[in-house]
Image (cartoon, rainbow, N blue to C red; front, side):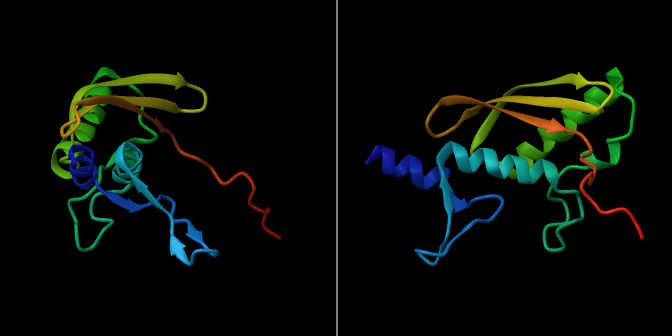
Length: 142
């Protein structure tokens, strides 16, 4: 009974990216911590005002992708991530957010979030790679 209650609180939703099963004619679903992590990835990858019906949903991380990593930028990213989680992910409490420069030449930062799932008291973490992914497989113009 307690596990059923925890599962109902943690929720079930579409996988991201959405995946469809032709054999069962359904949408693939995710539950529990996997659903929380997928929701966090969607939250961080969504720009504020991108969703018309939820204009304040998301973060403005994309606007900072070409900025040099300074202590100020690191604090701004940490604050934006923490505020987004506080506003849009009620299933978790943030323990810590660490930002690490992984590849300066590629412009990649890793945002590590350690969190506690409120209902189950389980600790978990997510590493969100923050960088601009270029379309390197595009055909050259003719």
